[in-house]
Length: 65
Picture 1 (tube, rainbow, N blue to C red):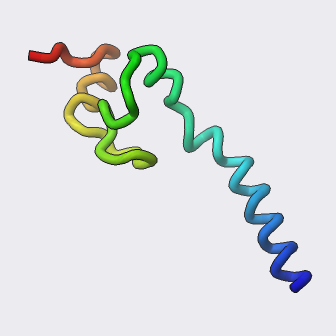
Picture 2 (cartoon, helix red, strand yellow):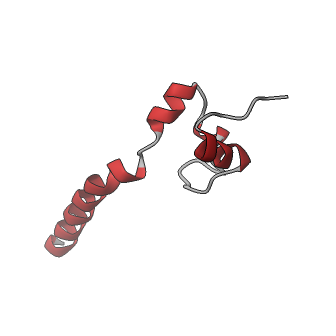
Picture 3 (tube, rainbow, N blue to C red):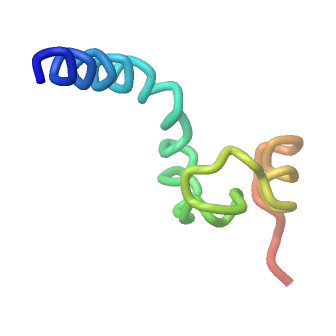
C-alpha cells in the first residue's frame, strides 16, 4: 500500500510539472474567442484541423463563408 501511494504521489507531481506544456494554448482560444475545437480535431489533442493549420501559418483564423 505504501509503495502504491508513493508511486501515485510521484506520478501526480510529474503530471503537474508537465501540465503547463500540455495546456499552452488556452490564451489563443481566449484571444480569438473560440473553443479549442475551432482549431483542433478533438479536445485535448494536439492534432490541428484545417482552420488550425491555417492559423498556425497566418496567425489569424480563416474567414467564414
